[in-house]
Image 1: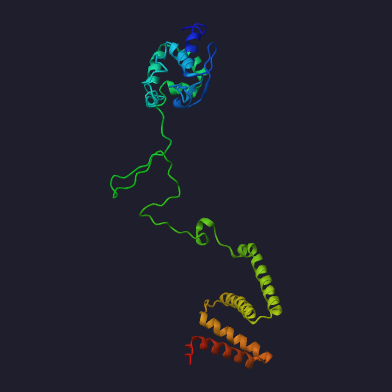
Image 2: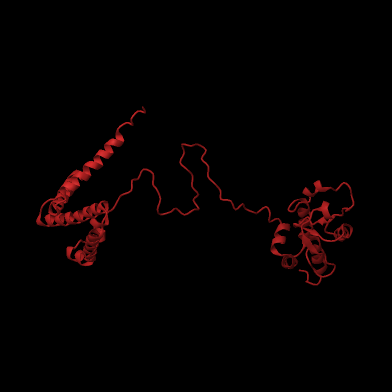
Length: 292
């Protein structure tokens, strides 16, 4: 293997070609600029240009034994020819052949000075580049089952075709344990306290409320609470639960209402108001009178 001292000039030449900062005759590297705008020569190995006057820069590059000589002032070399000297193509392949005789130590030092990104561009890393876009599987025929990548982990929660999901109620399942009435009543005794507080609040609102519509709603709510209590007591006695229809509920509510109105002596007033409302509704349905 060659020593680092003897490999110094060769590395300097290689780095000058690649447009990097090295010891000795340096070439400054700036961001890429078009050849036609400022007369700068593009470095074929990276997206940068060799900064300086076109003639001097070209002289520095052409003097190196690693790059084939071309003249900067040649009219045949135009902007369209830049595609031929694009990075990763013919010039990079030629320099790759020229630098192939370097030893492993020289290549390592060259990599450290150039940087890993530029080194990979020169030594054919472009071919091994992979597209980051995920590959999609397409079916050749719509009747075939859909293809899925085997590298992806299958999710636990997924829809299986042809398999119906089994619903499970934890209240009646043995996995949840045995039902014990005493423990249930002890753990959920606070619900009865909340219900009693709610009933007291509704009764207070009913006393303060002056609007008739709001009063009716609150009375219905109280009747509902009382009815649920009665139903629970009847079920405890051994009777089957009976669920009222809406029509039966309205009848019971009206009966309760008439009882309270009888006690206050307001039955006639209530009937008159009800008749007025019904007559107003009927008038709306009638057609308008013709203009005379």
